[in-house]
Image 1 (cartoon, helix red, strand yellow):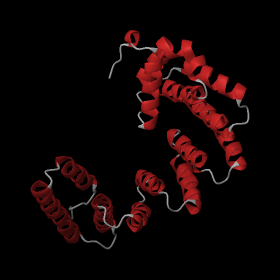
Image 2 (cartoon, rainbow, N blue to C red; image 1 turned 60 degrees about the horizontal axis):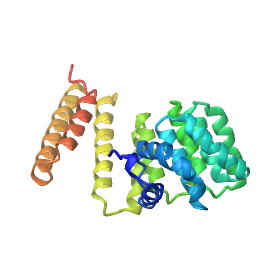
Image 3 (cartoon, one colour; image 1 turned 135 degrees about the vertical axis):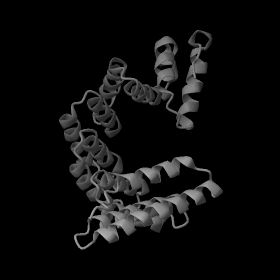
Image 4 (cartoon, rainbow, N blue to C red; image 1 turned 180 degrees about the vertical axis):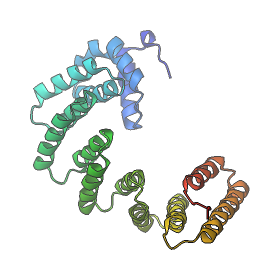
Length: 260
């Protein structure tokens, strides 16, 4: 969505920013544009809300890779609140955007030491390891995190995805079981769990050293039949072709050899 900043007063922009904060809408490009063209010159009129706006603009600027805007916001906030953990978290995001990951991790460690009950900096550590392609480190960090925050469903979902990246299907299935304990009636979680178990079972059959070529051929036929039956049910119930394509990809990735 584009905004004609020339037709908006500073108070209208303020109200728009407030609305986006309350509704948790990022609208990053619009925020940076409206900040630079309208609101920045009237920031002194915002009163106490000025701090919330600076934080909002900082996050938006980082989304848009406007490091210059983000730096000015962080500098202003850190000058006024040098010991604020909230401002330090913004500094972490800034360091990540600059790919200064080691400094970001050090700063996160200092935040965690000051407030061990704060989940956000621990999850940022996971995000940094993942961004650097250090999946085993991200898994360890998230596993330690979930020992303290076991009810974090997003955490279990993320851990499942990390295990899948490492092709550790058994642990990925365990994560989905934890999610099912929190949401036993979620059909999406049941579906994801079934897909993982299905892949795990077919892969185990195909890779088993005790599996004969005849059994492997039977397993391959069974996998194709199961895919066909699942596809029919998706076709009848939800017409969800995207899910069918996902299952087809899973089957095609199975290395079940039928050679004698």
